[in-house]
Image (cartoon, rainbow, N blue to C red; front, side, top):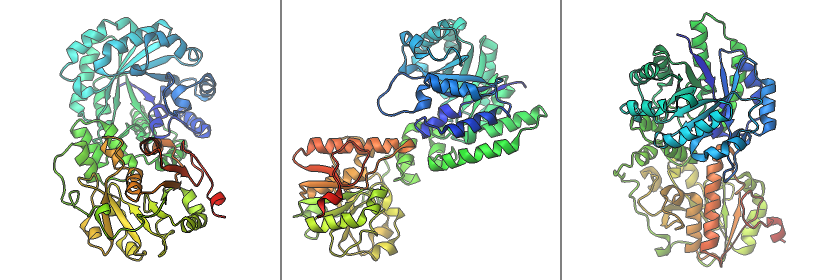
Length: 522
């Protein structure tokens, strides 16, 4: 029962940090790996330039590789990954020019439908003098088609050293994993690996099945950090391996390193595979990307995520609730206001609260909250205010707090059918709830359901000629997807409403005209 461990925390955990890691954390992590029965450390991607910001461990410049090599235990081999869909064979010499001093093994992530292309990349990597690993994704689709797969792989046997099966959706069971590993060991000349996702809590059990069937390498990450539901935990598989070999793990150093990873995981809102949406995506063999996207937005209840991921046609009564259209109501306020201030959830809205209130009163503006976060702080009986409730935000609010707010405050939801729910306990309160059509800039229901999209739609119902933003500070890390969503909405708003002035009153990372609230209140 001899096998090797490949830790890929920096590569797979990068999905939560945009592949940026503090080098102090990295150094401690690499020192910890040196005390564990770990044979390989996959330190990130080596990628061609892509649109948008992706960090140091997605591109791995020479200086980074050199720094990693200077710290890593000499018994651990550094590994990088290429994504076949992003590469062409002719790119390989330039792409890997910095790697020869430090990297022995290059792994290539390959979708089964792109196997021919992936194998052409493998040939180019081999020609450049590296050992080659091919990671075949979507293991659940290979179980009944492995003979054809093995035949294609054998045609390239001189260009492949390692072949790993990736349980992409975490949907496989131990007997399935054990069988394909055993068959591969009998049919193929490569070292065989397994990369398990933990949607069903089976990453460890599946890895044990692979080990019992003779697998050569298993992948793991600290805390199971990784895309979607996460992976086999390094601390678990190395402890198991130490026990099997009667070797003492350095648990104190491991615990110390894990504490820092735990803080990072909490900061980046990492959720493991035991979250119900990931369990459902595993059982139904559904892509994790949509689950990850909806969970990352923090505005949807578990039931709504599952309904959306499964594309259920069942619509709840709450989602179909009808509230009067604001533009058809005699009760709404602010329709003559030329200016609105849309408040985001950023700290700058709180920090400059007094100046923003002064600006609002001076200009007779209305306040549109794109979330409830600052509504209490801005509560004022003389300021007309609206709170946009997208997703399941209504279910999170304390109705006792709401009932204490000014009756000038009104709540806005999207027209049905909604992605989120308006609970009856919320709708039955003595508050004003109206519906508004969100900004019509996309067919993507998740983007249309954005609180900013709803706020911009409301501003047009109110006939606002100027839209001032505050508290749109921007996002980083895993929340970069939210930042892209906001920027897309801002760009679309300026294009759809060229006569409407849109700018930020507070400092913002977004590409949008900025002013200072303090220059506008004298």
